[in-house]
Image (cartoon, rainbow, N blue to C red; front, side, top):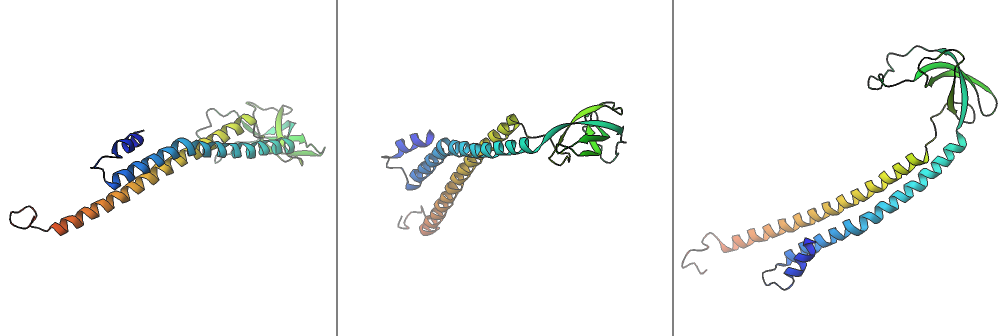
Length: 200
């Protein structure tokens, strides 16, 4: 808003320099980019991310299956694999389990189960692919939407930062050119500037 008021105030002022008007126009352009272009870019980026993530959710839901696995025996915890940050609140246990793949074949192997004290014969849910290999659970739509919103907000913020950075860069270059012109004017005035009888 200061840029608009500045343009209006300076437009007929005899003390107004060309660089003052240029700075005001650059500030106005940056303001318009931040207020108009950044939200559009954020919306478009968020929509594109949402479409891609929805497609990924559909593909994962089609290719991943929830099966029931049976605990054969509990496996020892690996001291190297333990994460000290999650060890206190983590209730997952490594077990040797047996399950039936979606194609009907029997599978077994070490998996991580959300069982506090697993006993042989305990059942738990396990996500597998078509061949029965264990996979992570599919991405849920709410998480996909959250990621898309964050992508859109990030793109909008990046656009705003680029607009403000560009404005600052242009204004800095204008200031450097103004200072260079002032130095040239002082050089032309010479060391005798202001003394009586030097022609000034």
